Image (cartoon, rainbow, N blue to C red):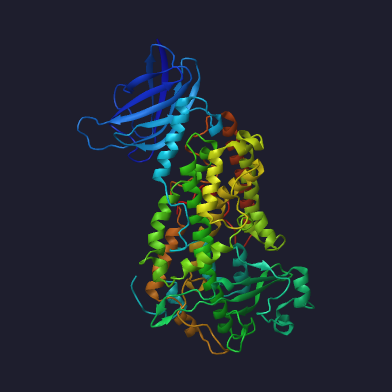
Length: 624
């Protein structure tokens, strides 16, 4: 007679325990132990506990392959789901094997758990495990569908604002230090410029070495706003001029309001980095084609003209941020990665173990988000954003592989040396840390390129992402030939769902709570001549009271922090059984901790701290 010792852990979430009868069947290479109930004296599977059980067998089962878990009703109790975190089995031979579960189990289910080290498909040898792997993938592929981005088909008061003081009455009890700073400084040109580096959309400006022909800014126009003795031509040559071109906004449909489509301007904004290392807006044109009715606005124009021109640039930027850089480039692309991972990798696959924590709650939040944000009665639609789907469609066709790889993105936009660009500084350091972690894990399981080529599940995974999700966009891999290619892509995935989402999501309330600083809707058309605007014009252009309240409420929800957050580097659900990847995770966490200390120290020196990419503020997955 031999004994198998089992440690069974119940999750610590609310109602994770069960009163039901739990049964275990052990499968080994040399036989199986029949269905056995786990039962100690008193309550067994209570929330957040680990119970120890002994299963006796007449002889050893050989190498332990699978553990099957079942649950039957306790007398006449109603359905009582149980969250099993893991089962650790100590065999008669002294081997300790982790069988991760991390799921809810219902009555009537037969849940078969794989244990031991992570396995690639070509490493499987035992017929039972080969069949189990095939059956698991068939089941998952029937459950998870729709990996293709469906971009092809996809509160009250109507009163206007009387004064800017009225705007401050929204959410008097819910403010942040940053939202209050924005309220006080939103009109200032240096703060306006800084938002395109360290605000919620640091993805759009590019170095400008030559003005586009449809933006006829002259030396005489901007000379007063350059440093003494400087010229526009020389500053472009020195790399101090930057451009935000909103051409893709041209022709985007908008909501009809009072019989007229709401305005949306495909503008151009020119920026200058002065000797004080501040990024300053120096010229704005609100439509793509220059004309007498489309003047170039300058900081020397009447205050309200310049202010309104900046607001129209930020209005289009807010749409671009929300539709493209937030929803499409993080939420929806993460959904593609998540579904492909669920469909193509069995739970024993090393890349499943590595990636699945980074998709926690993403499918749930996206399903609800589509209805709330983009449905017929969605908040964005009611706020005048019917063109968001069209904007996503246009932007998706322009997305390239290099544009989602931060180091290449920064280089392509010519932003390697622009000062005070903390999104770049923190983002590149996080990219390096993530890449080092991914490299260690991938090279442990794929020591040569041959392993990458032989892994048919891996090749199916990237093929599904390429074909159904990325719609064969430029530069994205359709297959993997080398470990280097695999490391780069896995780095992109983890960076996107953690760091990039934090950068474009976490500051939404901070920067857009104060409606004039960035709104998805402006009611009045843009000015066509100078000297015709007033503060009354600006107030009438803003969303009405009901629209503003609804939008502010949404921003608060999107930027809120919850108590069950899992930060980048945290892996509360134990999945790896081998010591090597466990040590790699510890080293990953240590590097993130060091970076957090560095960022915190730097922020102490800044008037406007950049906190969104501090590791303590970066979630491991998209959950909001």
